[in-house]
Image 1 (tube, rainbow, N blue to C red):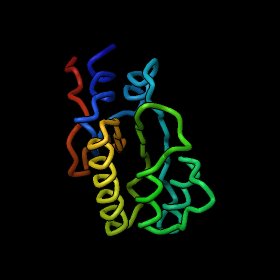
Image 2: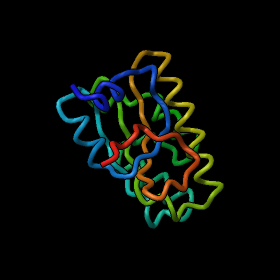
Image 3: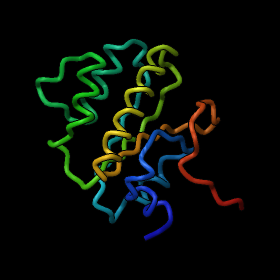
Image 4: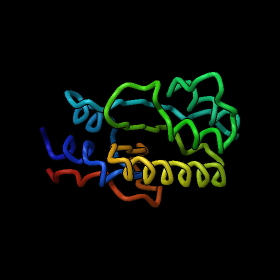
Length: 144
């Protein structure tokens, strides 16, 4: 198992991160028991569209209420998803209103802490090639 795969399976490292490219995360997770979900957040310029896109990407159950509390409830359950941990990859966040992005980051951070306490990996990873988000890097890219 490579270093990134080891990191993704370490629940103590759970959190919200950024990466330059999604392919490295997808490659690292291949062969692990992690559940990978991808959500393209383009064209989600309001809360309702954002929450609907996440519900689709994660296959939320019918009881999902379409609000921030319901998002936190669903992300704190995920019993309908396979895997021994979860990696959520987000692309296209740039069009989100700053307030909505801020709340989303808060919810994801809370959920990562919740899962880490239960010793299950939970990583929310934003594809951010320009490093615009004030998030830590998931890993350091090898200089070439």
